Image (cartoon, rainbow, N blue to C red; front, side, top):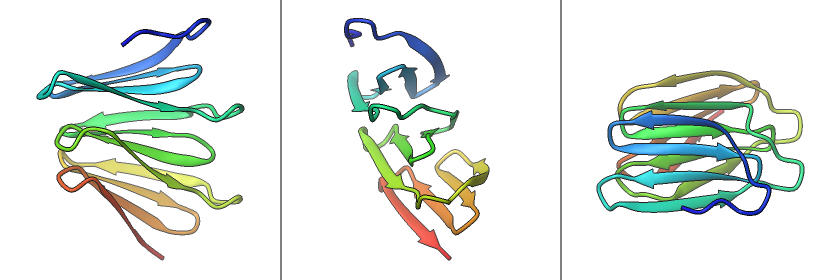
Length: 119
């Protein structure tokens, strides 16, 4: 992975099967099993407020969306928040991340790379 001009690493999360690196412009994920980097651009005014990882899944939270990265499937899986939706808590097991917001509960399963929601 090569950083762009004026792109700076702000935080990272190192896990046994993957690595998540957040910069001021993108979020990068490294899938250890395939030796491959994936990148997801942040919007012009989008900033990562939280970065969590456990087991086979890592997640970056911005005011606009949640970005999940799976060690199994590779790549980023994004789900958008509504304008007034606020994250209340994040719980993780080795394969599932649960994000509770003021509006709904979002679950990401690392083995299938899919967000589901309950209202």
